[in-house]
Length: 265
Image (cartoon, rainbow, N blue to C red; front, side, top):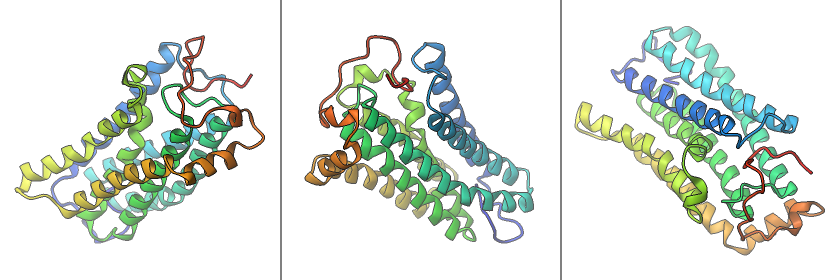
C-alpha cells in the first residue's frame, strides 16, 4: 500500500520497486503452500479455524498486491477506499492468527522442528510487530515515503510461513525459526539497497522498520526462555493434550508425511 489517504498524487518515483516487492511476497506465499501441498506435507483436512485463517491471510496478501497495483497505475481514489478495508482487516488477522497458534499448541501439534513454547510466542509476536508497523504506516499515510516502507516491513513479517515451507526446516533444527527470520529480512534489506541505488541514501523508515522486526525477534527469545514464557504456555495449554508436551523440547518427527494442519486424533 502506498497510502490510504493523502495528497492527490503521491508518486515519488519508487512505485515499481514496491509493486515488484509485493508480487515477490505473494509468490513466496503461493510457492510455499503449494509446494507443501504437492509434497503431501499439508492437507485440506484441517479444522475450519485453519481455513478461515488461511483465507484472511491470503486476503491480506491480495489486498497488498492490489494496493501497489493501484498506486502504480495512478488509481488513487480506489486505493484509498480499499485502504480503509485493509485497516479493518488487521483485526481479523490478529484474532485468527493467535487463535490458530493457540489451537495448535493445545492440540500438541506444533511442527516438530519448533519448540512448542517458542512457537506459541513467536507467531503472535510476529503478528503484533506486523500490526504495529501497519498501524504506524496508516498513521503516516500523508508521508508517502514512510507509509510505503513501513507497510513493506510489516508485510515482510508475514513471509515466515511461506519461507518455512520452502526451506528444509527439519535440517535447520534447532535454528529453524531463526533461519526463517533471516529469510524474511531479505525483503527490507533489498529495500535498503534499492534506496541506495536510486538516491544514494537510506530512508529512515527502513531503520525503524528493521529495528521493529529485530526487536520482535529479541523479545520473542526473551519471553520464550523466561518464567513468563513458561507461565504463558501452562496457562494456554491447561486441560488440553498440549499440557503433556514439554514446552522447550522438540517433538519427534511424525510417522506420516504431514507436518502442519494435522487433524486431531
